[in-house]
Length: 346
Image (cartoon, rainbow, N blue to C red):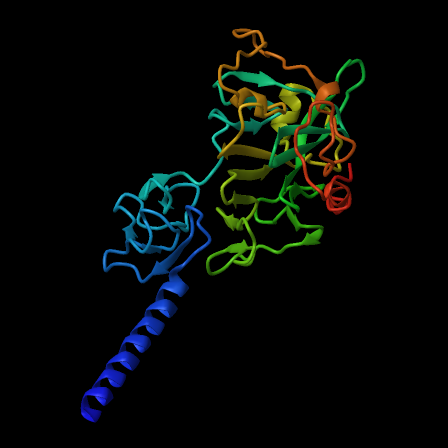
C-alpha cells in the first residue's frame, strides 16, 4: 500500500512538472494578438526566413516560411526587392510586397498634397501653410497632418505639403515628421519620431525597428524600410503606414514654379495608409472616403479635382483631436496638445 502511494505521489509530481513546463513554453509564445506578432526562427538553408506565430487564433504557434520570391522580411536593397510580409492574423499567410508607399494606391497622401481615397478617387486638398487638418477622425483613431508651404507673389493660394503626422489612439500619440533641411542629402536622415512627447531613435542595424513594450494594449512598431528616410509604422488593430521623406528638387521647383527659398528643401512626407476596423461614420479628409456607399463630390476627369472643407477639418494644433466634425473621443484630449514636441516649426 505504501509503495502504491509512493508511486502515485511521484506520478502526480511528474504531471505537475509537465504542466509547469508547458505553461512556461506557451506563456513565452503567447503574444499580443496582432497579425505581426511572431518570433523569428533561424532561416532555412535556402535563406528563406521563418517565423513562429504568437498571435492567438487559427495561426497560433504555426511556422510560416517566406517564399523564394521574397526570402527576407527586410531585404537589404529595399528599393529594388519585395519584402516578405508575415500575417499571423486570420489570414495566416506570407506575401511579397514592396516596402514603400504607392502614391497611386488606395489611401495614399503624396505630393502637394494629392490623395487617393478608399473609394479609389484621386483628389487634391490644399489646406494652408502652417495649418493642421484632421486626415482621419474616428471613434478610436485620429490622424492629423501639419502642412508647410509657400505662396509666390501673384498667387491666390498656397502651395502646400505634409511635413508631419500625429497619430492619436487610446491615450497615446505618435508623431512622424520631417526635419527642416536646407541642403538635401539622401544619406542623411531627416526623420523625426516622437512617442507620447518623447523623442525616439530608430535603430539602423539588427532588426532596424523600435517597438513599444509588450504591456501596451496595442503594440506600435516603427521599422526602417531603407537606410534613411523611409519607415513602416504599424499600430496593432488600427493601421499600417509606409512613409518616405523626400525634398522638393531643383527641377521640380523650376517646372512647377514653387519658388522654394534657397535655404530650404521643403522636406515632406509621402504616405500610404492601410486601415483596420474603421467605423461606418469615420470622418476626415481621407477617412470619409472609406465610408460604405461614399460618393465623392470632386469633379472626376479634370486635371486637379479639388476637395474642400478646410473649415471643417482644421484643428488648433498638430496633436489636437478637435475640429468641427471630428469624432475621436478620449479622456486624455488635453494631453495630446503637448505631445507634438514642436516638430511643426514652420
